Image (cartoon, rainbow, N blue to C red):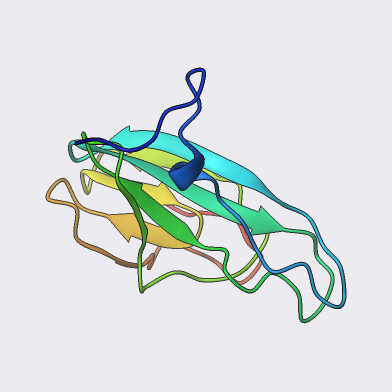
Length: 115
């Protein structure tokens, strides 16, 4: 049996964060299909000490989502495929074609991504 679907909406896939105090927002910063899954990174406003619960999420073919333990809280909204290494860079995470993930070594302190 699959997840509950209401008018095309799957409530169990909602990305959320604690609202504080201090209060903040939460949204999907990036979404990308990779390694036979859908990957999403959520973000929070840049308010300090906010955003508990955000990070990197993995959604499988049965629409079951789980937060990855390697997640980092932040305001990341980037995603791209780094073809030389055959990896997806999403937020501050790097994902291999097999779905293995960890902190991206291509992330600079300034927040840009280098080749």
